[in-house]
Length: 99
Image 1 (cartoon, rainbow, N blue to C red):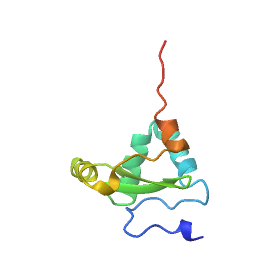
Image 2 (image 1 turned 90 degrees about the horizontal axis):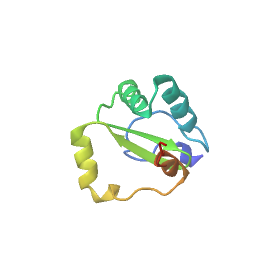
Image 3 (image 1 turned 120 degrees about the vertical axis):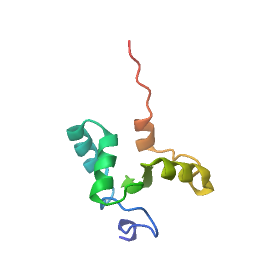
């Protein structure tokens, strides 16, 4: 139950479900809007956070920076170094071969 609560100082974003997080909602809305980048823009407007949004996919927390200043800050802070190695990030980074 404690995993359902948003971590301290975590950016605003949608409430997640147990086990799957926001993956079902992200997929459904991305299909409707034709891209995950449009989902992030929509969530930034809904949760009134123009720079950064936070959500969960599975048991991993994700932060998406939407402005140049937020991106610069995320890239300069040591806390945000590295990339998680899990199913969701592998799925998003699978190269697509065009024949």
